[in-house]
Image (tube, rainbow, N blue to C red; front, side, top):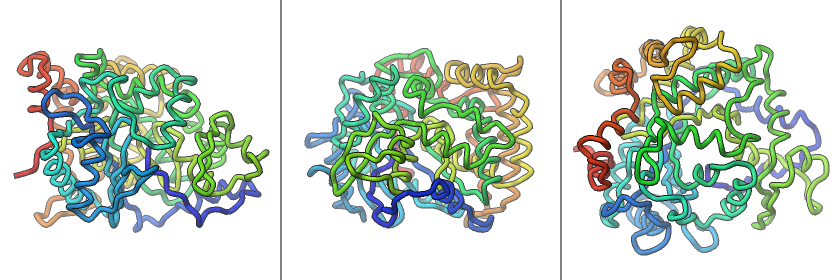
Length: 458
């Protein structure tokens, strides 16, 4: 959930439906301008006991933000007198509701650029975090602290969202306070290309989410899932999350996404710094009737689109949202795999061939099975591990064809090496965590922290 920034340049009243469609059409870019952006969420824990770091206090998340701002080139952003985000030249550091730290990285030409930025980020947060007895874990959710033990970050939008989550689902507040993911943002060339990439990415959700499944611990022990984070999203808010059936129609276009977005309840509206709870209104209601004398603007539409949480989200670009947060050695595999699959036409078609014949019922069944069993889930009798090997092969080919090399002459396929090794063994990151938790870590938080916390590269 990105930081809300008022967009005064878009305070244009919506008078025609075409304006909503034009929002997506305006995001189209020629192929030579396609970039990749990555957003990395990380859970922060206290070094002594592995429990979630509170927002407040001398060794809390707000103190961490303030020290980062003092030491590095970050500008603190405050809400109601509290630091809730940091703005950099090309990036943001924002907070999820439970204090999870997110780097919204710059839009990069290639994954080498993202790697350099991510490495700097690790150095900054680990060095400052060590002074405050804070560790960052390469896991997809808080492993020890229970929901009620985690302090809310004091942001107005979260005070609106939290009670709404209790009305519409069973695990929404867990999503908000306990989970962490990695999001990959990619460009499209036009409507047909956008929908093709969206269809392929959403079709691959069960396979790729199983490859990256990394949240088997919660509330102090194993939770019965490889990606409990993924499962939590299925119990959060059915009106705005999950898979979208219309995407799999060959005729799907921007009109369909507009129809979907219009019928989803809003979270908020902001006017002159005042926040309005809009959870009782769909955007269609607001567009037709207004609210307390205010009319819907394009800024409202843009903000509303950021509060929709399908596994693949459409804005002025596409966002892949279904991957658990990872250890540093696997974090860059997410944008690398995505770029390899979606930015080469032949690879896009080859990836679609793997999943295009599944029925909607099979997609849903496999989607849920992947959360619980990871790469050992099956579809039509085939292990997801087998499909994952093919996905990796296609992604590697796509990256090699793009020939984006670093100073050592390596293309972006180097970021898939660790993931490829895991997939060849039929394992996901959660399998490693489970084995260590039950084995060498002996279910002790101290060993978990020692074995999974971020380190500054030597």
